[in-house]
Amino acid sequence: MILTITMNPSVDISYQVDNLSINHVNRTNKWSKTAGGKGLNVTRVLNQLNEQVVASGLKGGKLGEYLEQSLNEHKITNHFFEIQGNTRNCIAILHEGNQTEILEDGPTISSEEIENFKAHFEELVSKTDIAVISGSLPKGVDSKFYSNLIKICDKHAVTAILDCSNKALIEVLRGQYKPLLIKPNIDELSELLGEHIDEDIESLKQAVANPMFENIEWVVVSLGSNGVFAKHNDKYYKVDIPQIQVVNPVGSGDSMIAGFTSALMNNATDEALLKKANTIGMLNAQETVTGSINLKNYDDLYNKINIIEV
Image (tube, rainbow, N blue to C red; front, side, top):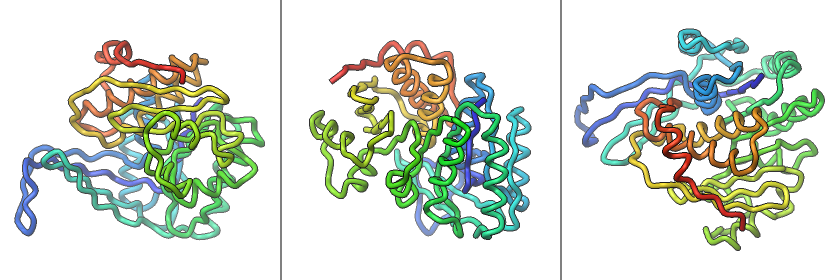
């Protein structure tokens, strides 16, 4: 079973407009409302891949009820932990090939809620094969929190996949307990190392071989339309992807994480894992709804991906 964790979920509202006119009324008939947050995007894609997945995290108020209802409608098992605060909204406006986002901070979590969630997490993770931990931490939660969750995963011999950034990721990198896989983009990698990282192969190899990433089996660096650079133990891979018509790029990184997780569950080879993850990410970018894929296009994209060990 796969467990996904979204500590700071949201109701994601996406509006598509031909032109965004500032200080004027903008009307659209192209919009969507989904149970959002990085972990829930992962969840929906895993469900479409027919993987056994359970979603958890924090929810509160009427918007929290909407999250649960939305997942139930898609027959996705979920066990959220109820908090006193209200789940947030996040708005994305897609216009002229751009994406403008308005993100609410979300609720502040009490120390009691944090400790009770840890117990909730441990109960769920004890029945899990892989735990996918994604996204930002809400207010009130210490930046070492994900390190604590990964320690619990280690206690139960559960594989952890982590997709986060900033202080939460740095604390995990400094800690004793490590996830199997992390997926920074090139800008996040530069920020972690405190220097600009170029996209040439030697610069990327040197960057992901930094002692900071010691004992992390997979370090996957997203390069956007230029594909992916990945380190698996002592092997390095450059993944080249085909050009596609992008409809909505939101959630493509999360969809890649779903692809990695599914491939790991099915004991895929390195090449098959990288191809599946990148294919799923591209499939999401071709759809209007975040965390949605059309598997009819899977084989065509999969076969166009080129992987070179470097």
